[in-house]
Structures are given as C-alpha cells and as structure tokens.
Length: 248
Figure 1 (tube, one colour):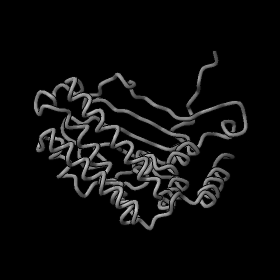
Figure 2 (tube, one colour):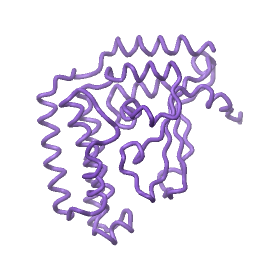
Figure 3 (cartoon, rainbow, N blue to C red):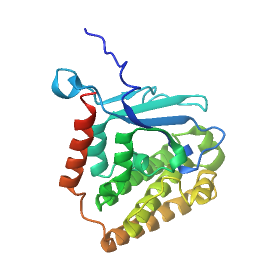
C-alpha cells in the first residue's frame, strides 16, 4: 500500500487556531489543548488521484485526553466550507475567534474570516441545537447508568461537562439568531464555568436546558437571518480562494 505524504500540510495550512475550552474562555487547569486548522492541498489533490479530507492527531473516541495532550485537526477547505454552510458548530467557531486566538492566518484564510457572516443562517438552530440536545441526552442516559466522567459524577452526581457544553451551544445559537453575529469567546463564560463546577442540581440542569431550548426556538422564529446561506456567494468565494492557491 502506498504511504501517505503530508509534507505539504504545514505550509498549505491557511488558518490554525487554539480551539475548544481555551477559545470559549472556559478552560481550567486540567484542560487539554485542541488545535484546528484549514488547509488548501496541492493541485494533485484537486485534479489528480490523491484524496484528502482531514488530518487528525487525536487518539480517537475511546481515548481520554489529559491536560498535557495536544490534538491537531486540519480540514480540507472544501469540506470545511460545506460543513460551515450547514452550521456545524466547530466550523463556525473557527471563523469567529478573537484575533489573538489565531496562531496562523494566511491571505486566503483572511478571506474566509472576512466573509464569515455569509455562513450564518437559520440552519444554526438545527446544528447547534442538535449538538446541544445530543449532549443533554448523554447527560440523562449517563446519569441513570452512572457512566461518563466518573470524577465529575463522584463530585456532583452527574456529568457537569455535558451540561456546560449544552448551555454553551444553546446560548451561542441564540446569540447568532438574535444578533446576526457571534463571539466564540463566550461572554457568559463565568456562568458556563458555574455549570461545569456543579452549581446546579441535575434536575435544575435539565430544567435550564429545556428553557434555553424554548428560547432558541423563539429566536429562530424572529431571526432576520436567511433560511440558509447564500450558495452562490460562498461558491464564488471558494472558487476564488482555490483558484489562486492550488497552482502554487
């Protein structure tokens, strides 16, 4: 089998940033570091036989990270754009970081960031809300089975990290739908850390999630954002970026 050569990856990464809890402002002394990036592969990955979706250095779903671990995920620009168009939270978040949170931005990367508002639409409700609901379902199921992050269960009676992530996703989606803008660095980070530190009982946590989910539905009903992103504008943006880069 032919070996895979990613010698080009670092040079052709157009955005690299520290993401996850450090980007949200909810990191603790035990937080691991997650780096996410976007790349434009060489021309043979567009026109030839080579294929590339993403590079991922993490240990996988069954691997528990520690504070000393570093995960790196770099995504093909076309895959990134397609996922951002349907409102995938991780992709939206990369585009709305504070300036000082980016480790690398090239000219094509800056073009993506400058046009980040093109990716905001009512599709945010389904994706952000869907991820939040999956977190709360895990919270409910694992609370019954007493599985999950055992250290948090021992301290608080349930996995408070699932709760915090649900609150973060729902309040982020509400912000986007109500304002048409977004900050990955969360203005309510103190509240989110309280959620993480067990300030709410399990019953209170479930009740709060239900209230926020209702707020999200109302925000979507009254939002002035488009139903979905402008396909033509984003398609032309991607063509311009790729056309200028793949021949280099």
